[in-house]
Amino acid sequence: GWALLRHRAPLPPSAMAPKPKKGGGGARAEAAQREREAEAAATEARRAKLSEAEAREEAEVLFAQLARAAEADQPKRVLRLSEDILALIPGDEDASRARVAALVQAGDFSAAVEAAEASGLGAALVGFERAYALYRLGRHEEALEAAGGGGGGGEQQPRGRAMLRAQLLYKLGRYGECVGAYEELLSGWPGGAGAAPLEVRANAVAAHVAAGRGAEVPSLLPRLKLTPKSSFEVAYGVACASLAGGDHAKAEHELQVALRLGKEALYDEDYADEEVEEELLPITVQLAVCAAALGRAEEAGEAYSAAIKKYGGAGGEGDEGVDHATLAVASNNLAALAGAGGAAAAKRLERLVGPGGGLRRALEASLSPNQRAAVLRNRAAALLGARSLDACRELSAALERESPQDPGPALLQAAAAAREKRFKKADELLAAFQARCGDAGGRSEAQLMRAQVAVARGEPGRAAELLGEVEDEELRGAPATVATAVACAEAGGDGAGAEALLEAA
Image (tube, rainbow, N blue to C red):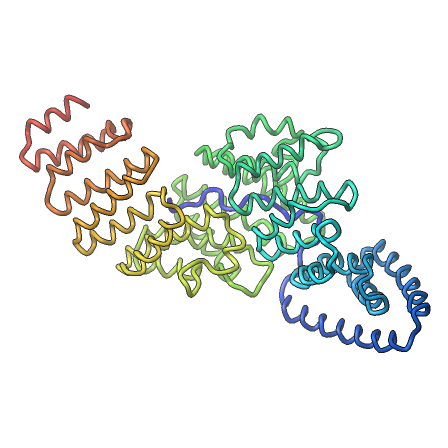
């Protein structure tokens, strides 16, 4: 469980709003807000001296200027003009809508949410902008609720809502629903699915991979009029499908294609060398995952270390440009290369965890639910290896509450108890998990560990019995399982039992 194979799916924010510029966003946003408030106060003072007719006449002039600014794609000017109009005509519907849209375009998403809610216009008029702003703030549940309602806005806005809803379902880890959302969106696209924007079709590929339907990708591509060379995002999604299927050599080749296509595309858009490197960091880290799986651990470790060193680790709160999800994978997998526990691994993963033991805020917003669970599970394993048993138990218990059918947290809690030689408690924890688990594979994993605990407490005969009762037939009959069961039976003085196990095998 250490390697996160599908670490980042290519889900760009689409053309609904530009990506915020890097660095210093908070301070600049506050300064801009103060400037807008000062201008609004000045306009309000001037408004107080105007008659209603004069105010409307001045507003008409400003509306003409606003229309030209919107046509020229000047969100800052649109914002200033809309606020000037609202100072002259408080509550004007058109100006209020323009203000919300301009805040979104300017990347001031918190202010956009506040403006949408304060406008009183409702979901039909500013619901889409509010939903998108919530999405960019990482408030995905609220954004999904907001994206589900409202109408109006012409033909494009309902389609935009559908695109946003599909992205949100992905972010929330509801991958099956996400696939369905993309299928519905593409089936109704004018001109057919192949006429949809390239990024929408690339996202549909990513959704299939995340939903465990990577095997369908080869047949999906021609339906969407795609090939791996359509874009580097598509090539990346195809590579993720190969990774999901365990074909690391093929995935490595496809990732190299994605890297080449990405460089060509980004250099064509006049990206600088460092910007290209940062944009393609997910592909670089994914290539390291392939290298590790193909036995080139040193090469993988160097790639992970270089990414962490250059971009400052993962989970920081200050830089909106940092790809926190990819850096979390690099930190996580670098710890894995050093072994599944110990102080070094625990320290590497510590940077991903916030004061309360959960993931840092930036990671909560950028990792999928499966990724979040995997990182925290690995953190608990590292704490176990470092003999920080109380911390391991606390984190494992929290994970178990979130995913009661996942065997990982139960195995970790049992391992922590066994480390303290509380073998009876360890067996009870595992038995309790088996009683509530609805999956034969999960119950079988717990059964194997119960046998290990029995050996540790000096009961090899009991271990042999437990191994003979493993539910999963393939696992029970595996050579390693049979050999261990035979050795345990012999160690317990049950020669006849050992012979019976061999004959049954």
